[in-house]
Length: 464
Image (tube, rainbow, N blue to C red; front, top):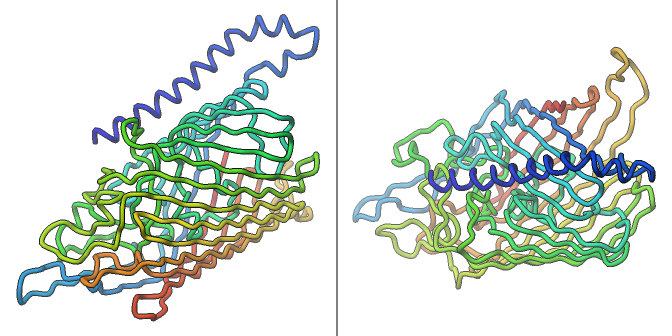
């Protein structure tokens, strides 16, 4: 709990800095306006604020799966005790997955701040039942101009972003509510630290980052992460409402601002071409990260630790249960492509990673097409069903390491996965949309058998 309080404290400090900067800018507004009024610059110097609320209600239908774990939880002679990996919460369910407050502020084109606070965050909680219910997802301040992917920089320039923020290679304009295998495993969550970006002219750019580094943990790649290491799973005869899930290794949420440990250092080099309107463009980025894994990272709501503690296997009287780890380095290189052509968009990402000598690769691509619908009916002065956006995402995760001879409590960490997410997002009114999608999720067991872990998800999203 001490780490949780520390995390919330530093996030609150960042938000306070945003508000303090806002107050300072507002205090100086009158003087700036007097000086700029004759040249027409007063409006550009005026601070701009935007507050909004977003809510998501869901219908979820998860296919039931249950796999016996080839691991003996009781090492005593003449006793064999087995466990299971199973669907987190199978069957059909209605649930509210998110209630989010978003705060944005900007002053001209040189200073901006952003905050994102989740008050439910059901699909990001890991463990689902005992992780924190409220969370500061993003809280950052940026000095300078950061162009959006596949748009031209206005000029040569530099920006500095400080706080809790998305990773520099992440896709931030997903067209489905689900995540692919690559986006889940490598960059789903924000990291905390600093990012420096440099535009070398309008087309070439570079980015550098120094951050805490997301701890290595495990979760189901479908909507619910699952419960692992929770108090109600402390005995094998327990039958909790939320099960373990069929899990993969992934970069979990940053729990605290670690200023004493080794930082994760990252960087990228990119090139972009686009028209002046920013409607058509292409962006190619190559990037890399490196950090030293911690012996153990404490995580909210679970007695399992992250990083090396997870990879080493369970403590106690067990032998030959650790994954074949070598060293304590976590390294990854990858490449991104963003392509926009009118309402058509393509995002693709490749990642090659080693976690303590355990190699794996991931490949993901999403194609979407958003187009306006003809006026059919209007309510008041608003069109009903103004637009529609079908999307398809394919992703693959190949793990080039195997379970130890004695097995592990989570053998799915080494399985190879393929996932296809297909769906459509329909605008209902301005600020309200409905997404219907189906995840065809396949994995290959250690014996070569292929199984599925499919899920249907419907999301009604509202934003003020």
